[in-house]
Image (tube, rainbow over all chains, first blue to last red; front, side, top):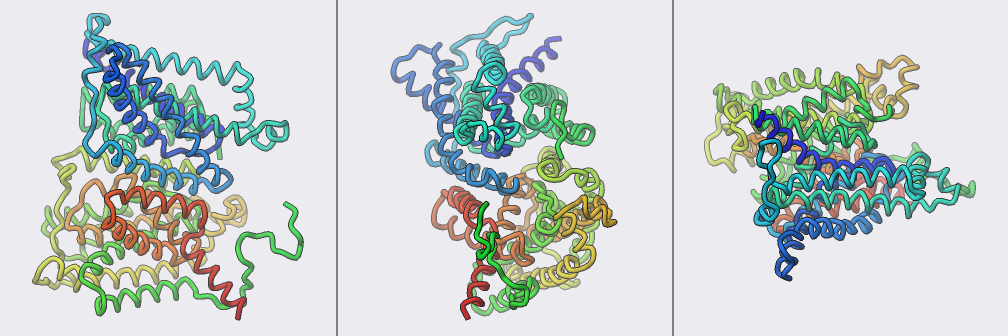
Length: 293
Length: 338
């Protein structure tokens, strides 16, 4: 029973982070129809910047419990880097998707060295922050309170994002642009502003996800390329462009990984790809995706 | 778009078919001839760079049958490099088979055995789904190589011993072997496979592939068995990838999981687009440019990834037809000027 709970909580924590990054990927794909390989770089950027921000905050005398809000704010702030990146991406919106993929692949390579330049090649950690929140008793299991807070924060972001897209006027404009860019432009929507805003929000989801993960694990140069394939797995399982799909996919990938680490560590990554391939063969559009050519 | 009728509306320069331009095969053979003469003038270091280029060039010829001619972007093509590399490693270090011809045969057979079922599943999809499915299979292969330590040596990889060329053993240091007999062996292989690919893309089969790229529905209406043709293209490109992988592994002397990682597949796409996937010799030119550029940048700065990434971004934005496109434009201008 404790093993099961352990897997469950570890998996859901990982899923909470994965969901944030995948939601950013989905948002951008849904509106701009661009698969952003650089989403992993945003995630790593958030992680590195989060460590720097917490370091600065504690040097400035902030109490230890402010780590979580500092990390979220740091993620949101560095997410603004999405604005200039979108200017670059804008040049290929109307091109073949292979060029879009390649452009973001180029950005991924560039970011890799940006991290190396600013933060060096050795992995950075932030472990003392992890203990600041202590541990909680959860159904007879001791778990770090921080993990529970992150899961709660991720759920809150998911709900807020859903409400924003479904209920607000701006959300409706975004969905209209996603549905038909030319038509919404004809109705007076400034689509390039919508694109810039959507991409920046997508980027912020990635950077916040990265910032939230650093107390639990180190930030390293490999984390960007490693996360890309996991985020890809999430959106393929859930279905491209679907927020509900991102949630389901993140939970599936997070739980499978946690279970595999416990039962058969060799199959950790293997099992994820097996699920991805099974989904693509049985339901090519993913669990919640719309059928596409 | 309102364009005056006097100016052509296309982006590509208007070149009438009667104008002579170097055909893909001639451009390819010019590169081969230059490479054959290179050992007379170039340093040993330059030659050690060229041998991996031969491996990449072979893989890229196959990759472009899929990407440039059939219109399918594989983001997991490094899997086939890995199949070739590990075939060489298993044959030389575990089974003690040193003959390179036998190794190549086994690599080809392994590539076919894996490409047929994988391709069967993948070619049912196009566009981004094809890319993601191939990526997933590539990473599946990577995780098997990476995690099953006892079988594959994990992240340490497996050693690739020096093979026999046509049954002949060569004495001397590793560099002498790589830049001497093996250089010409790999170049010969590249020439042979390049000419074979030229025949393939000019054959009715190649025309079928182009028709599928342009309009799969129309091709199907005209009687092209679309998925079977795509599968054939996938298998052929996989075989080329595996042969390229053997060359790479023998050059490095090691087969490790890094060669299958998805960023390596990204590099293959990078090379193809850098050279220009629309031209027969384009990817080969791209492979050469990539190898030379990477070497120059790596010796100049430790931040070479940034420079390579920036080059890729600029190419995608400003020169989507790659180096071959630039050459084509220059030739067109030359002809118009004279």
